[in-house]
Image (tube, rainbow, N blue to C red; front, side):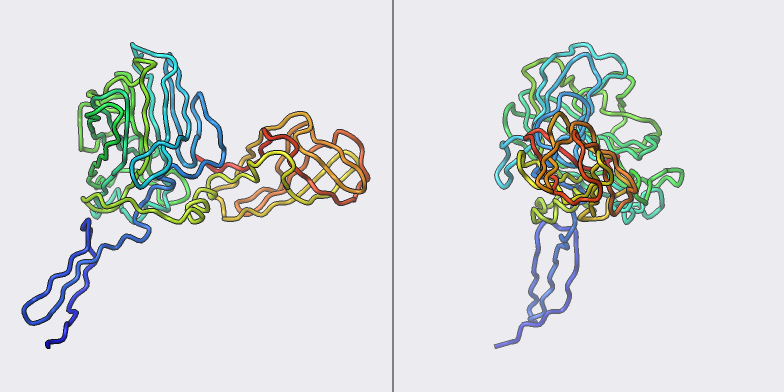
Length: 375
């Protein structure tokens, strides 16, 4: 019996691995390198630290922002509705129609990629790499839609179209974008915005382009072929399984461990708790008779020094210690904040003894305290 010999192992962009066996027993293996191949964070829409829904421009599930500027209205939410292999999707539900968009009006779903995470693409050089975007989409409204990639200066734009063929049916789409080789391009490779990926659902005339698949020097949201997704309150849109990878082939979605993906999200947004009443916040101390302070170290270095994210109200936070319970009725203020840690202070609704230690807990299911380093 002849012995199998491994001759060559190649890393390729193929969608599946392949082994070729020669007559002399030589084996050539084409192995796809898929580890951390997806440049999108939370592409399966599973991480949703903020919880709830939004009805205007803002972040919904982690890393995904809805931009809505029209005479219509929408509601966006995380829902348990997805194709096989996924659990969640982002749903955009049109609640007030706008049948005639003004030139600058629009609706799109966007993720901003940090420059550090795309520096290896070498966009803005002669060595710019091609990338392929794939995703799952479902809608009540069939027709042509667009996905537009831009830099942060929005002076380099590439629009491509896809078609939703069947209403209320999950369909997988893929689009390939040739890397931008223009040396005039401004593609950030640091902690600022490196790339914007916009899923255009509606756009007025000043925000559309008839140029597809090529880089142009202006800011656009969709192509001139894109339907008006805001034209009826019957319109619903669902997205999940979003993947951006190097190469001209769309491979299977890279499912990462939930905890790993959560840490990726916490670089941009980090919340203490969304579990509600009587859950721990932190130990703290009384700086003075009416001020409580505590410090917090972030679980991962944040993209930039964060701003505070909070939902506060009467008795939303409880201060317990020294046989006394008082409450915080106002807002928390950050101090000494950095990318690594911060301290906070807030006023107690009743006098306490300066220098004493206490526990701080959430005292209302609506209370929220977190940090945002989003773009």
